[in-house]
Image (cartoon, rainbow, N blue to C red; front, side, top):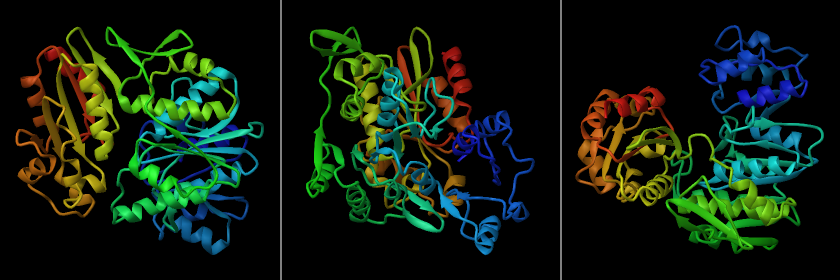
Amino acid sequence: MHNLAIALHLKGYAVSGSDDEIFEPSRSRLRQHGLLPEQEGWFPEKLTNQIDAVILGMHARADNPELLKAQEMGLRIFSYPEYLYNQSRNKKRVVIAGSHGKTTITSMILHVLEDAGIETDYMVGAQLEGFEVMVRLSETAEWMVMEGDEYLTSPIDRIPKFLHYHPHIAVISGIGWDHVNVFPTFENYLDQFRAFIDSIEQGGTLIYCAEDIHVRKISESFAGNKLPYYQHNCSTNDNQVFIEHLGKHYPLQIFGNHNLTNLNAAREVCNLMGVNDASFYQSISSFRGASLRLEKIAANDGLVVYRDFAHAPSKLKASVEALRKKYADYQLVVCFELHTFSSLSASFMQYYAGALDAADLAVVFYDPHAVALKRLEKVSHDFIKEAFGRTDLLVVSENKSLSVFLKQMIQAPSVIAFMSSGSFGGIKLHDFAAEIINKA
């Protein structure tokens, strides 16, 4: 939401907003552009007839006092995705969907388009190197590239966000059951992606991961243009991954089978947007990844520390296996936080079985406070070990215990990965990583 506020401000709109919690980096970015509210909280008196539109974020509840006032006044209310569609109605829309990989694929596309000089508006779910904000809206761009999230649109519009976008080019990267609080069965979850396919504009193109059996199956019903994609071929020399094209070798800064699959999705999209393969490979060789996606945050001669946004079982497994393959001779230590509603649900936890098998040492961070906030049933450490299928799994509930364990057990050469969409109980990971390395 704060990125959209900044994008509209940069476009020349008068923008104001409210929230009851504003964290970094949102706070600093809003302050930089003169958009930070003087007070946190909800203020219905801010609503006047001079307002052209109210944009409702998912954080506000249906009984939010400002929302109720806007409804009472008859103001035009948009959800975040509705407004993005409104701003891109006359553009060619590219939407990248899927349970995993969508942020990375979107980031790859934007990185290549920037190099190619192809102007595009966009919305992406991670901060990108060379891009000031995560949302761009203009009057001049022909294209709009958007990450398509399957989660609900808003408290008063309980359908997936990506159903509002109506893409001309659609990507589905993979499907692994997530968001069990709103999609209680896997079949119900699949239905959202079927509806996404149905939302593609007449004459549009579906680019889909043919290696994913669920994606492949639901794509069969699409009668329009279809482009299947697979993991990209590569070669490795001295731990460096290369792609060969027409006799030329292009080194990559990313790694992992999942990223080579993501790369091929991005290549197919860029081809349709006018970028040939040679230009694509030249640009993608300088792509260092999206923020929080297998992001290296500290290193010395014998220790490397990564952080990753992985939280769903398929994401976690793919990231762990990518690190195992890249650092075959290192001790691999993975610290994973159960943070989302799905991951903390006792009935869902079984889907993590095998996800940490490639790690030499595996730690799960389980915070009872997070469980209480989500009003879920607390489970035992033994239950978590059984769900993950590792009797040697260490389960901790305090970041102090995590720190003690890592300082005792880490020995060079090691790679340590912190994987979560949360913060491990408020750990400042850059400082924590530096402390671990210095102690070791």
